[in-house]
Structure formats: structure tokens, C-alpha cells
Amino acid sequence: MNKLIVALCANAFAFCSVSAMAGNDMKPLSKMETQEAKSARAAAKAKWEKMTPEEKAAAKKAAAAKNQATWTAVDETASGITYDAKQGAAEAAASKAQPAPTKQERQQYGTTMDKKASSGQ
Image (cartoon, rainbow, N blue to C red; front, side, top):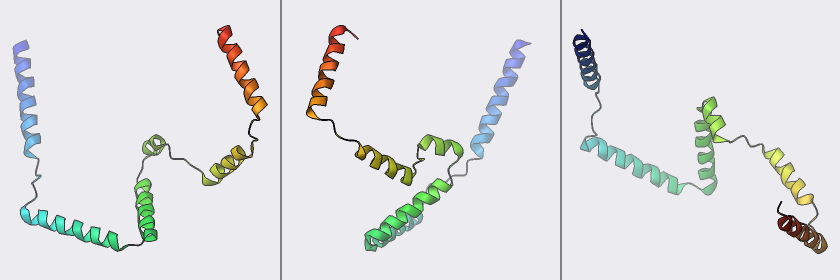
């Protein structure tokens, strides 16, 4: 009985594999399609070279926006891009507003660090 079940499972697997392989209708590019692709790439490169830096930046920004619009929630979370420009500018200004430590404060900080290191903390 066990041999029969094993044989049936093996046959089912073989038939499923063959049918899956038969559904593959991908064909390699022919020479004509390859040449068309190369000419389209060359035309795009020529167009890109003629663009001004502002146009290039706008094109990149539009492509990035189009790409980001297709993101799923997982993609958006994984990217880590949740940057708010206004908040970033405020944080940068706040960090620059802090006074730099004086020479005496730096020396005092260094001595407290030495004491901590020598006490084994």
C-alpha cells in the first residue's frame, strides 16, 4: 500500500512539473529586436545628453516620485524615507544654536572620563 502511495505521489509531481515547464512561452530576443533595443537606448542617451541639468533633475525627481507611488506599505517602511524637510531644517538650526564647549569644559569632561575609566565603570 505504501509503495502505491509513493508511486502516485511521484507521478503527480512529474506531471505537474512537465505541465509547468510547458507553459513557459518566453523566447530570446531575435537580432532585429536586439538592434531595436540598442537603437532605442542610443536615442535615449542622446536625448539625456541634450538635457540641461535642471531638466535632468526634474526627470529624476519625476521618476523617483513615480517609483515611490507604486510602493507598498512594506516597501515604504523598509526604505526608511520618512523625512520631513521642515522638521529637518528646524533640528539642524537647533543643533547649531548650542554653544561650543570651552577649553575648560573640555578638560573637565576629559578628567571625569579618566576617573570613570580608572575606577572601572
